[in-house]
Image (tube, rainbow, N blue to C red; front, side, top):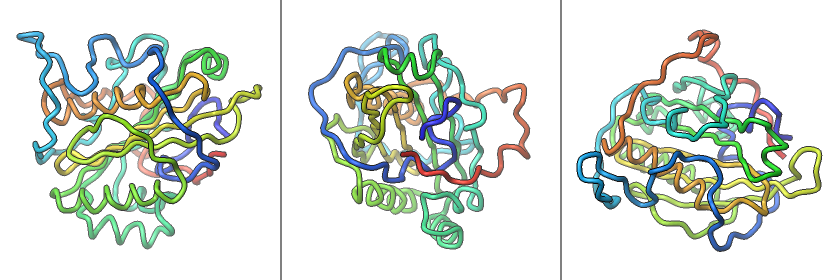
Length: 268
């Protein structure tokens, strides 16, 4: 069940299999995020206004903090609230114990093998929550993971993608980063309705970074374009085409409260 305060109630749940899969078709008109001016497949140059195409071969080595590359409140139009309880700084131990991996021991082992440096997860809820979702708004979640080198990020990307292949449906989308794939699942209903709930994910790699971006909304409104545009924001930050600024901690943020994920609960 999707909670009112959070799309997914713990870190690592982007990669869980969420039930029956649905199809995807032609793009729908945008609603709200991302903010105006964000291009799909490129970004506008502040100096020239010309669109710079996405370069699939550029592979930067990105440095911590990983939060610099996540979607921020400033990247979105108004009407979205930061999901503070679902915001975490990630490390080998706390990310390794999430449901992304079969066990905490295996998670820590794999992340160590891949050279995991650290990560970050956050999310955004539409004002009006479920009522807004039934009118075309959607929840957003993003995970950013950094590795020592490109070799580790390639292995992590392959692992994440294989997890999605086991239960989600692959959908067509414009590539982003060095490697990417897009996925859709339809599972359950939007709360207090009989409208199907749709989850779209893009997992992509840019250099030593692997990112997972997810949207959750009412199936009749949701298309892969929406999550693709959000993924482009992350990639633009990784490429230096958009400012990558470490977010200011929220007033109730304390490191101790954000170093360990909550007990995983499978969204249904």
